[in-house]
Image 1 (tube, rainbow, N blue to C red):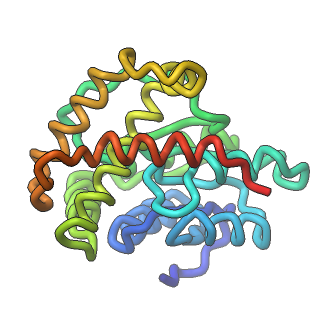
Image 2 (tube, rainbow, N blue to C red):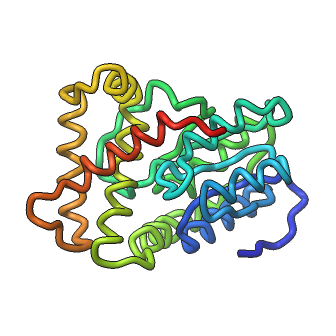
Length: 234
């Protein structure tokens, strides 16, 4: 994906949906930034190392290298010490009540996906101490396009179920960091049970495909997420 050249600060955006990235890129361009697109976590790390953007906007539901691991890479590199990181809550559900995360795995801020058009420019501006514009007249249209882009992934059947379960679990990890850390120490999931049950409800309501009897995609995605968190990049 190629964006028009802009003179503003370079901002990397990592999201697997080309449609969502397109809308996010337009928002960033209008705000005075120069967007760079990464389609996954591996690309994000390569671009950050090569281009050293002033900020990175990372979808928490990246399917290869988790956004939390990208943050770990950035924070562990002295040359990237000034890079700001904003996490994007990956499941589009504007009606859901979500408390502010108590901590962000080393990120500087976060934004819920449906608030990319109206809140992301201001958050980046505040972090970078620059003036950021906003297109108030186009917010609802952009929100609708972001929603359509997130739900229209080029996947079907079991692949789509697995991908959405991973996104839901990434959101759970973002909003329940203390509980996830406690689980990693004790392997006791009771404090997370309510959030995992809500994730199962969201997965069923999404209507992305049938869930085989006896399977639990949310539990499987959560186990995978924890395993990846415990695997340090070499």
